[in-house]
Each structure stands twice: as structure tokens, then as C-alpha cells.
Figure 1: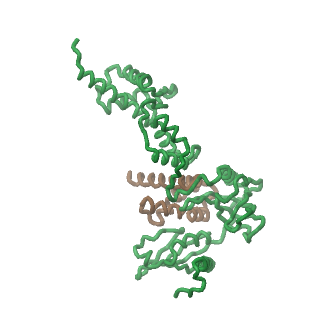
Figure 2: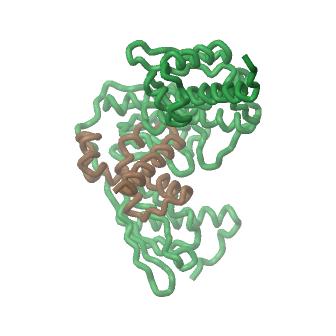
Length: 84
Length: 346
């Protein structure tokens, strides 16, 4: 899901400032997950992962749930890439 | 008629395998009659069922219910069979440590969450629980005196669930929120904060935060209306959160954003696998192994906290406010370690 899809998922909020703030807030956890699970994402890939996962991340009620969201999102992206 | 003990043994083994296969297939998902027969034939060959496969399948299902106390319901509307309880075939016994790990996951991903990732985890837990014998299922529900620690997962139990619900209500309803809060400066009495709440997020060390625009605090400690503040969820006093009638503005008041710049020493940057800690980070790698980094942030307090992880391997060069904050933090640490009079490093 790219920027357009995110805009549909979070109407009236997915402006640049909103997105920038979202990335800023979720980056420490996403970076930690990237290192912990050895996903090998570069910086911009992590930002993209956050953007794709954002609608679900915003509903997470614990850091474990947020990690699970990132995990599933990573797997989905990975299998979509492998299927091409 | 001559008895054929070896043939009978083979036949009953075959029947047993078929019945186990039915259970295995139903554990995955409810299936209708034709699908079950197809699974059996695919795994055990076409001869697994005689011509009257439907009747034979019914015998198998009846036997599973009668002999093994399995609870298998036929869903009339879909024509599928659903495995509700494994009865005597609940064969997954687990050591206490594994049960405790399971209980930890269970409490970390409670029922009712609407996030797809956690729905999948709930489904997995339900399957595993289904495979446990009754007494182990009961043990799973009994609090253990041993507390499992899984590192950076945080402690979701410390976040008051009623508070979390009130916060969600305020965010979804776009309404102001008031709550009593212990900041790190409030040691005895919490202060009352009124905020415009926008989202909940979690840090890498497991803390949950409410991302807000500050409206007011009583008494005030210098917080400015319009300032963006992250409140720790576990420091909001339980039962104090009240959703107010005042609506949020149509668009959030924008905070200032800052260009953060810092240099990482060769000690951490030499291999060029430096963590990407801020949005739109730009790295310039130097010949001596060090790196200069620039990024844009809206939260200097968070940036300070993040960069402190590098200790002496990071020198912040901008913006001036962040340089001041880092100096203050370092001075505080020097005082803590009795180095208040130490000369500043070259």
C-alpha cells in the first residue's frame, strides 16, 4: 500500500506532516524490529514498511501487537515480492 | 471363514489413519463432505474409501465422536463439518514453561483486537489450546507465580485498559481529553492535563505514548498551548481520563520542525550499517570512517532520548536547542558520576 492507499485508509489526515510525524514516532520500534528479526531493510524501506502498516499500527494496544503488525506486514511484502 | 489377523491389523491401522487425517484436515478449517473425501483420497490413495464413500465417511465421523469424544458439528447452512473439541485426541501436552510462554502470548494479544495481525495470533492460540488436554487447558488459565520476561516487549498489563478505551474514544471521536498525569517531575501529586489527542504509539522499549497537542495543565509547569507532547500511557492515573465535549480543530496545529544534524564516530559508523533513527535521514560517509547525518524531526525531546544511545560516539551539531539539551543531559550525568568539575573534552 502506497501513499494513495494510506490516504484512503486515513482520510483527511494523510498529509505530509501527518505522515512525517507518524514515521518519526514509529521509527524506533520499526528499526528495532528490523535489527531484531534481521529483515535487512535500509532506511527508506523501513519508512515504507511503516507507511504500509500504519492503519493497523494505529490500532495496536501494546508494543507486542505493534511488532506483530510489522511482522505480518513484512511477511506480506516479502511474499508479494517473491511471487513476482 | 479363515481369520486374517495380519490383514485385520492392516485394516484397522488404515481406518485409524483415515480418522486421524479427518481430524488433521478439520483442525485446519471446516470442510464439507466432498472436500473431506478428497483430502483422504489425496493423502491415502483412491482406495482409501470404498465406492460408498459418503457412508464410510459418516462411519468415521460417528466413530470419532463415539470412541474419542470428539465434538464435530455439521454446519447446515454451509454443509461443512466443524471440529469444536478434540476430546481424547487432545494430545498436545506441554511442559509448564511452554504453558507459561503460551499464557504470555495469550495476555499480550487479548481477544477483541481488530488488528488483522493479532486476529491471526488469536486463531493460532485457539488452535493450540484446542489441542491441549482439559487439565492443561485449565493450567493455562491459572496464573503462574513465575513471571515470564521476554525483553523489550514492554508490560501491557501496566496500561490501564479503561484508560486506553477512553483514549481511543477521544481519538476516534476527535474530542479533547482531560486526565491526571504523573510527569517525571511530579513526585507526589499528579497534575491535570487537557489535550487534543491524535494517536497512540509504542516505542522500541515497550512504552506506550499518547501523541497530543497540549491545551492546558493545572498547575502548569511551563507547557505551552499548542505544544506537541507525548504522554506515557502508564503514567496517566487510572480512571482519570475524561472525554470532553470540545471537538478538535479540523486540522492539527503544526509544530515547528527541526533539521537535526549529528556526527557519528568511526567506532559506530565504520561499517556503514548505522540505524535509521529519524525520517528522511541523509548520511554522508567520511574517509576516516565517521558519518554526518541530517534528518527532520518534530520532537526534540524524543530526538535527544534517541541519540543518547550513542553516548560519546555521537556529537550533535544542530539545531542549537538540541545541542543545549544534550549538553544539559551530559552535565547532569557528570554530576551523577561526580565529574561535575571535569574539564570538557577537546
